[in-house]
Image (cartoon, rainbow, N blue to C red; front, side):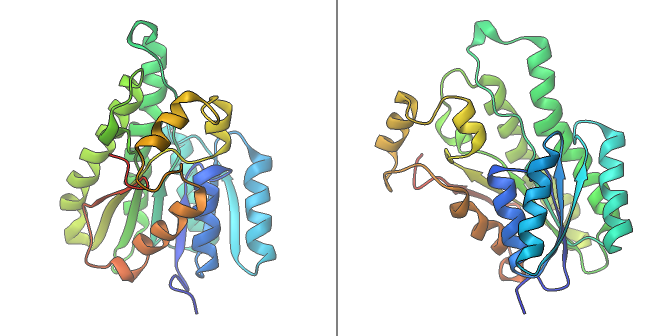
Length: 249
């Protein structure tokens, strides 16, 4: 039996990258997983197929965490399929850098609506499904709140909010046995990071030069940390921000 046998987990933004890795990792430890996606149905179904092929349980559920009605539907589908919830991974996010003079009102709201409002809305609905045993909320923040890169004011602002919200909700939900922690990755090689043009760039080389372990991360570097936070191995941890950056500060 795995560490998460008979548990149910929702992973938002799980059609690719860090979210897909976490979904597969939780399933490998016995959890039934809801693989949420906003637009990439094909990617989400591929993750589900891999989980099922390996003997796990998973379903794909579409919905943007930035939209309240979508969030309600994600958790209604979770309840319909599995009847309960034990773990929420708030992974869905918009990753975009812009210098100060290029920031727009539309961009600000688009990034904050997913990265901050989406996290809050998903946690609101998850709280209703957690049982008397409580549960684990895992927020995916970012090491940008440690290194403050240029041209990231909006993105870093959202992740600073995630850090603060994690610690507020740890206190607020603790009496209900709901633990709230965050994983703050450094640069991780994902489809989104490739699309943003960071792989092979001077930005990547600069970060690696400052990283004690000398490389950027892979999704598999993050997955075991999420499994740890989802399981009772971390039962005495809440309100923690685990910077998973190879030592980059």
